[in-house]
Length: 530
Image (cartoon, rainbow, N blue to C red; front, side):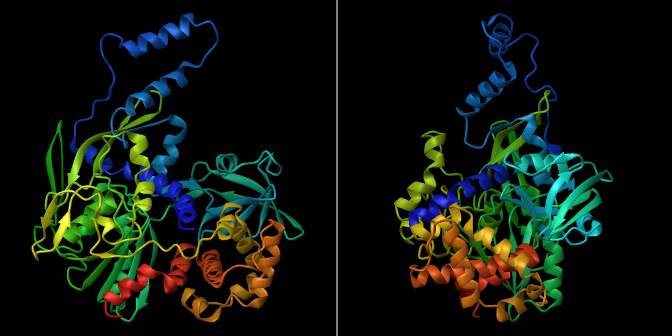
């Protein structure tokens, strides 16, 4: 039962960690020498000679660019797991995520029954200004028909995205009415902050999903509002945060640490030691602080968590973090691709290296979370310390460890009670997400009666009418849920309610509703005396 949950979430965890974590040293490039012609030499190397011979002499036509990419990736496989080659076709999207913005029309969409459906419309964005609504179905984008088996998400993104100020014509179906709208593209934010709200009296909650160029700014805006509302205690949720820009996590750490305290330092064979220290009065240097982490918290998340734990500034609750303590630098290549090369390790204020071992190869490294699960590391507090390395003591005498991630002060086991094989099928077939969207669109006037997520959490229930409708919907996917256990039903009902809130208020709504029954959040509130 628990293994199903791990299989569902582990690919997502690795995607977040590999994409987000490789950005850790991105902002260090201004302080380090960068060679424009990174692979340039006066004479051709062996690899280039082989590629030239294949191009000129090989018996069959072949794309040497593909061979070159494969050769580079094979070279990197002999280094560390986080040195990666980024093809030119992927670089723009990767950099957009790092920048925290892109140029487009500002919608979330999904493809149901071979048709593009608008899930949500960004408030104040280009699409809302043009009149798009949740539930609209795309028929054409400019002159391209976008219905049928051949349509896919990547094609849709390419058609909708474009330079700020450019226009795109869309033909929509709203109910039974056909509409034609012109949308002027603009800058669309990719938010780092999922939620920031008062979760209990004088207690704030902030959840960060990554560290991009806008993360510190988003964090400070949320913290300022919470401080003005009288918040004296804070829960900082970094679960599933795969990392990002080092400097952003340093800036946030500075808001919690006083004096000239060391936050992190980096060092490599070709990179001199560089220290990052607190340098100003922070917005929350006093007041009780809880940091939530799990096996998906990596890289810059571990930098922030490690600094706060080493200085006894925060109590860390959750499960051992991913264990990525390597710093990457980006080198842009002549063909528009890029290399993210590991150039240094980072160390917490006590000198801890958080990087887990990778001497047994990348495949073994990638399977470490599976091994941790099967060895009890996600279920048992004692087993949670199995992969830890050297011991250190904080100023208050607390025992902490290096190697294999950051071990929390308070362990919370992975919740496996809600995932059975039948529930897993509801996810793999996308039944839950499809139902939430369709039910929301059909009852949108009712959902609009709720002013905010707090009112919705108190006033909306998954009653028998909603449940019966969902039961009939699931049956269309050949899933009979009338025999589910009470635990399964409770899990699904809570997830449906949280996803309905997300339809209305995006991630802020989801977490505000979901946190009411989140075991780790409940543990944090308990530690804060709530």
